[in-house]
Image (cartoon, rainbow, N blue to C red):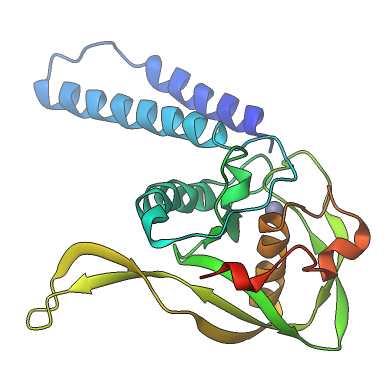
Length: 227
Ligand SMILES: [Zn+2]
Protein backbone atom coordinates (compact mmCIF):
# COMPACT_ATOMS: atom_id res chain seq x y z
CA UNK A 1 0.00 0.00 0.00
CA UNK A 2 1.33 3.43 -0.86
CA UNK A 3 1.70 6.11 1.75
CA UNK A 4 -1.27 7.97 0.24
CA UNK A 5 -3.48 4.85 0.34
CA UNK A 6 -2.30 4.21 3.85
CA UNK A 7 -3.41 7.64 4.93
CA UNK A 8 -6.67 7.31 3.00
CA UNK A 9 -7.38 4.06 4.84
CA UNK A 10 -6.69 5.76 8.12
CA UNK A 11 -8.88 8.69 7.07
CA UNK A 12 -11.71 6.24 6.33
CA UNK A 13 -11.40 4.72 9.78
CA UNK A 14 -11.58 8.22 11.16
CA UNK A 15 -14.68 8.80 9.01
CA UNK A 16 -16.31 5.67 10.42
CA UNK A 17 -15.69 6.87 13.91
CA UNK A 18 -16.98 10.29 12.92
CA UNK A 19 -20.34 8.61 12.16
CA UNK A 20 -20.82 7.95 15.81
CA UNK A 21 -22.58 10.72 17.72
CA UNK A 22 -20.58 13.89 18.30
CA UNK A 23 -21.40 13.77 21.93
CA UNK A 24 -22.51 11.03 24.24
CA UNK A 25 -24.75 11.84 27.16
CA UNK A 26 -22.87 9.24 29.19
CA UNK A 27 -19.75 11.12 30.35
CA UNK A 28 -17.69 7.92 30.40
CA UNK A 29 -18.57 7.09 26.77
CA UNK A 30 -17.85 10.69 25.86
CA UNK A 31 -14.44 10.64 27.52
CA UNK A 32 -13.57 7.36 25.78
CA UNK A 33 -14.61 8.82 22.41
CA UNK A 34 -12.48 11.91 22.91
CA UNK A 35 -9.51 9.78 23.87
CA UNK A 36 -9.93 7.65 20.70
CA UNK A 37 -10.22 10.74 18.50
CA UNK A 38 -7.10 12.27 20.03
CA UNK A 39 -5.10 9.06 19.63
CA UNK A 40 -6.03 8.74 15.95
CA UNK A 41 -5.24 12.38 15.33
CA UNK A 42 -1.84 11.99 16.99
CA UNK A 43 -0.96 8.89 14.92
CA UNK A 44 -1.93 10.64 11.68
CA UNK A 45 0.04 13.76 12.49
CA UNK A 46 3.07 11.70 13.54
CA UNK A 47 2.97 9.62 10.35
CA UNK A 48 2.90 12.72 8.17
CA UNK A 49 5.65 14.30 10.26
CA UNK A 50 7.86 11.21 9.94
CA UNK A 51 7.31 10.79 6.19
CA UNK A 52 8.29 14.43 5.67
CA UNK A 53 11.63 13.77 7.35
CA UNK A 54 13.05 12.06 4.25
CA UNK A 55 15.13 14.34 2.03
CA UNK A 56 15.58 13.86 -1.72
CA UNK A 57 18.39 11.34 -2.42
CA UNK A 58 21.74 13.15 -2.75
CA UNK A 59 25.48 12.48 -2.95
CA UNK A 60 26.71 14.27 0.18
CA UNK A 61 28.48 11.72 2.41
CA UNK A 62 27.98 11.66 6.16
CA UNK A 63 30.53 13.72 8.11
CA UNK A 64 32.67 11.97 10.72
CA UNK A 65 31.12 12.33 14.15
CA UNK A 66 32.91 13.86 17.10
CA UNK A 67 31.94 13.99 20.77
CA UNK A 68 30.30 17.42 20.36
CA UNK A 69 27.89 16.04 17.71
CA UNK A 70 26.29 13.63 20.20
CA UNK A 71 23.29 15.78 21.22
CA UNK A 72 22.30 16.02 17.56
CA UNK A 73 22.93 12.30 17.05
CA UNK A 74 20.68 11.40 19.98
CA UNK A 75 17.90 13.75 18.93
CA UNK A 76 17.84 12.56 15.31
CA UNK A 77 18.37 8.90 16.24
CA UNK A 78 15.10 8.88 18.21
CA UNK A 79 13.21 10.09 15.14
CA UNK A 80 15.06 7.70 12.81
CA UNK A 81 14.18 4.76 15.07
CA UNK A 82 10.53 5.73 14.87
CA UNK A 83 10.85 6.01 11.08
CA UNK A 84 12.14 2.41 10.98
CA UNK A 85 9.06 1.21 12.85
CA UNK A 86 6.50 3.23 10.90
CA UNK A 87 7.80 2.36 7.43
CA UNK A 88 6.95 4.21 4.26
CA UNK A 89 4.87 3.45 1.18
CA UNK A 90 4.78 -0.31 0.59
CA UNK A 91 7.39 -0.88 3.28
CA UNK A 92 5.86 -1.63 6.67
CA UNK A 93 9.15 -1.14 8.42
CA UNK A 94 12.82 -0.50 7.69
CA UNK A 95 15.86 -2.49 8.79
CA UNK A 96 17.70 0.79 9.32
CA UNK A 97 17.79 4.48 8.39
CA UNK A 98 21.00 6.39 7.62
CA UNK A 99 21.38 10.02 8.64
CA UNK A 100 22.03 11.02 5.00
CA UNK A 101 18.40 9.99 4.33
CA UNK A 102 17.03 12.73 6.56
CA UNK A 103 19.71 15.40 6.12
CA UNK A 104 21.43 16.86 3.05
CA UNK A 105 23.09 19.98 4.46
CA UNK A 106 25.32 18.53 7.16
CA UNK A 107 24.64 14.79 7.30
CA UNK A 108 26.48 12.81 9.96
CA UNK A 109 28.07 9.39 9.58
CA UNK A 110 25.65 7.23 11.57
CA UNK A 111 22.66 5.00 11.15
CA UNK A 112 20.01 3.52 13.42
CA UNK A 113 18.54 0.05 13.07
CA UNK A 114 15.05 -1.22 13.90
CA UNK A 115 16.19 -2.17 17.42
CA UNK A 116 17.20 1.43 18.02
CA UNK A 117 20.92 0.66 17.99
CA UNK A 118 23.09 3.56 16.86
CA UNK A 119 26.14 2.84 14.68
CA UNK A 120 28.51 5.81 14.67
CA UNK A 121 31.32 6.25 12.12
CA UNK A 122 30.86 2.70 10.81
CA UNK A 123 33.50 1.47 8.37
CA UNK A 124 33.80 -1.86 6.64
CA UNK A 125 37.41 -2.87 7.25
CA UNK A 126 37.37 -6.41 5.88
CA UNK A 127 35.15 -8.52 3.67
CA UNK A 128 34.75 -12.05 2.43
CA UNK A 129 35.92 -13.11 -1.03
CA UNK A 130 32.45 -14.44 -1.57
CA UNK A 131 29.77 -12.13 -2.98
CA UNK A 132 26.09 -12.78 -3.61
CA UNK A 133 23.11 -11.26 -5.39
CA UNK A 134 20.34 -9.96 -3.17
CA UNK A 135 17.09 -8.05 -3.69
CA UNK A 136 17.07 -4.74 -1.88
CA UNK A 137 14.65 -1.88 -1.50
CA UNK A 138 15.23 1.52 0.04
CA UNK A 139 13.04 3.76 2.19
CA UNK A 140 14.23 6.81 0.25
CA UNK A 141 12.51 5.32 -2.83
CA UNK A 142 9.13 4.07 -1.58
CA UNK A 143 7.72 3.83 -5.12
CA UNK A 144 10.66 2.04 -6.80
CA UNK A 145 10.63 -1.73 -7.33
CA UNK A 146 13.25 -3.65 -5.39
CA UNK A 147 16.63 -3.91 -7.06
CA UNK A 148 19.09 -6.75 -7.63
CA UNK A 149 22.23 -5.77 -5.74
CA UNK A 150 25.66 -7.36 -5.21
CA UNK A 151 26.94 -7.68 -1.64
CA UNK A 152 29.78 -9.34 0.22
CA UNK A 153 28.55 -12.34 2.20
CA UNK A 154 30.47 -11.38 5.36
CA UNK A 155 31.96 -8.09 6.42
CA UNK A 156 34.01 -6.98 9.37
CA UNK A 157 32.96 -3.55 10.55
CA UNK A 158 34.31 -1.12 13.09
CA UNK A 159 32.10 1.51 14.64
CA UNK A 160 31.45 3.53 17.74
CA UNK A 161 28.22 4.02 19.59
CA UNK A 162 26.69 6.14 22.35
CA UNK A 163 27.75 5.26 25.88
CA UNK A 164 25.64 6.16 28.91
CA UNK A 165 27.30 7.23 32.14
CA UNK A 166 25.84 5.38 35.10
CA UNK A 167 26.25 5.68 38.84
CA UNK A 168 28.66 2.79 39.62
CA UNK A 169 26.82 1.97 42.84
CA UNK A 170 23.19 2.15 41.78
CA UNK A 171 23.60 1.68 37.99
CA UNK A 172 21.27 4.65 37.61
CA UNK A 173 21.58 6.39 34.22
CA UNK A 174 23.05 9.83 34.91
CA UNK A 175 21.78 11.22 31.61
CA UNK A 176 25.31 11.94 30.36
CA UNK A 177 26.53 10.48 27.11
CA UNK A 178 29.87 9.81 25.50
CA UNK A 179 31.27 8.45 22.27
CA UNK A 180 32.51 4.93 22.92
CA UNK A 181 35.82 3.57 21.67
CA UNK A 182 35.53 1.67 18.44
CA UNK A 183 34.46 -1.95 18.47
CA UNK A 184 34.89 -4.51 15.72
CA UNK A 185 32.38 -7.11 14.67
CA UNK A 186 32.22 -9.70 11.96
CA UNK A 187 28.74 -9.82 10.47
CA UNK A 188 27.08 -12.26 8.13
CA UNK A 189 23.66 -12.77 6.57
CA UNK A 190 21.09 -9.99 6.91
CA UNK A 191 23.24 -7.99 9.35
CA UNK A 192 26.11 -7.87 6.83
CA UNK A 193 23.71 -6.82 4.07
CA UNK A 194 22.13 -4.04 6.15
CA UNK A 195 25.59 -2.76 7.15
CA UNK A 196 26.68 -2.54 3.51
CA UNK A 197 23.42 -0.83 2.48
CA UNK A 198 23.75 1.78 5.24
CA UNK A 199 27.49 2.39 4.66
CA UNK A 200 26.68 2.96 0.99
CA UNK A 201 24.21 5.70 2.04
CA UNK A 202 26.80 7.23 4.39
CA UNK A 203 29.37 7.26 1.57
CA UNK A 204 27.04 9.45 -0.49
CA UNK A 205 25.44 6.81 -2.68
CA UNK A 206 22.63 4.26 -2.63
CA UNK A 207 21.39 1.30 -4.63
CA UNK A 208 19.50 3.44 -7.15
CA UNK A 209 21.87 6.42 -7.28
CA UNK A 210 25.14 4.53 -7.56
CA UNK A 211 26.69 2.45 -10.31
CA UNK A 212 26.28 -1.30 -9.87
CA UNK A 213 29.83 -1.62 -8.50
CA UNK A 214 29.16 1.05 -5.81
CA UNK A 215 27.60 -1.63 -3.64
CA UNK A 216 31.05 -3.24 -3.31
CA UNK A 217 33.08 -0.08 -2.85
CA UNK A 218 34.18 2.02 0.08
CA UNK A 219 36.45 4.14 -2.06
CA UNK A 220 35.50 7.51 -0.52
CA UNK A 221 36.20 6.39 3.01
CA UNK A 222 39.37 7.46 4.76
CA UNK A 223 39.33 5.86 8.18
CA UNK A 224 42.08 8.22 9.41
CA UNK A 225 39.33 10.85 9.67
CA UNK A 226 37.77 9.08 12.63
CA UNK A 227 39.86 10.72 15.28
ZN1 LIG B 1 18.37 2.75 1.78
